[in-house]
Length: 113
Length: 113
Image (cartoon, rainbow over all chains, first blue to last red; front, side):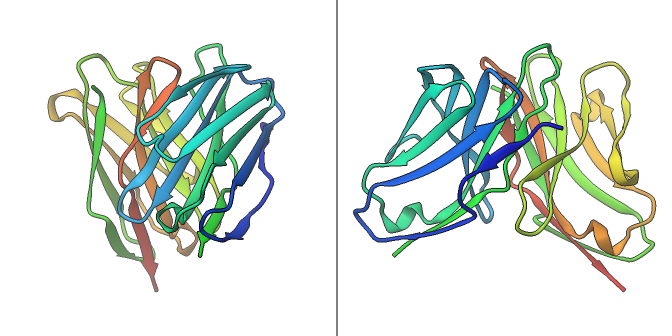
């Protein structure tokens, strides 16, 4: 089974802090994604990466950055957390071969106070 | 650009009743369509996917969806609801270009005794 692991289920941070959300997948997938999920808005893509050190902006990249130094790990960084970044963050990965199935982690619920 | 619209942010059914969750898509090319389910405090799990092989797609937990090109729809159904089906359901379309998915805003399913 594919496993996508997010390092924290719950995080509480203060405004202005630098926040790191970590995601690791164990299936040697090329593509990885970060979404945020808000009630009534569904999932919105923040950033994705199709290879090590490669990244592309998604639909809502403002206030976020990412890092992919190793194939299995994709980090989301909030440079200076703000209250409007309080949300559920979901990581996903997808392999090649035309299967097109994204596998998701359990999510990190971030509260910025 | 491909997109999906989910009609009804909340649906309530009685246990044993038919479940119908609606999804309409917009796509200029033959779409790849997905239904995902999210149980409380968990990530998303794939229910089923349509990739043009067959218009009626069967998924896990007794769910199925029918692709109707003339109606641009991909509604999710289950003949008899169970309490364990209570969750949030997301329709998504494969956007291509990096294996991206675009999600609908979600439908919360409530199952009552």
